Length: 180
Length: 131
Image (cartoon, rainbow over all chains, first blue to last red):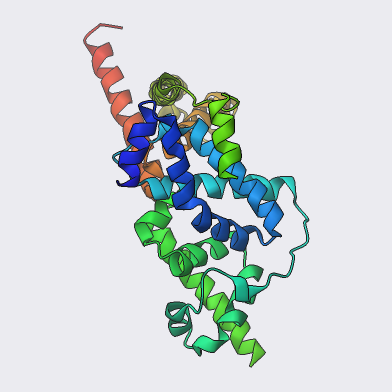
């Protein structure tokens, strides 16, 4: 059953099916939010719970002709923004990147023209980027979203996605060159 | 976490917002945008009319005095209100449906086009003596 078919059932009253939505997206969204807000597992879990509650409460607004994954990520993005606004100067906690779900991203290493082994270093620098650049990198390289999906998630024009990725990679390359 | 959320759903501690709520929101925003376009068009025509009343073409011929009259009588406030309403219409247009996919240039072009078309329609309606 596709996500859209599942949501259609939930919209028609089969609320018990919402558990399947949680099963499908819990892990993906956990690591997306963890990389985005750069905080401990507990904070991420609280935020993730808020995301699923928002999804359930607003599920009737979802158009089943569109892609559900982009919609749920959009809600996660909005909740993350609210989180940042409410906790403005929260210190970033150092994360153990070895436990990260997204492992050895060759595509990003190739685009940055560096060795794949330096991926852990890349992730450190990704965390230092501004939110808009960080999100575009996470969604494109770690969540394997295409430009269309990123445009839907971040609510920006298609062309701007390319610009954000280009600038993000430029910033990362600059940091890596400085390190050398 | 799944059990907690499903339990909240079963106990109706969290409820879905009804579909009609979102439909009304959509209609409200679209309706609001259309209303802003109409108001913008009326204001544009009003600014045009007030500038016409001053008749700057004739006043320019009077030199410095004419220019002073234009500067003093120019409908600044009406123009400011008009621009503000058009800007508001632009912001609301950007929030409609999938309009986030449009570049800023296309958004403003669309809004200005809508205002122009509406102004033209208003002047046609007026010329037929309907208003």
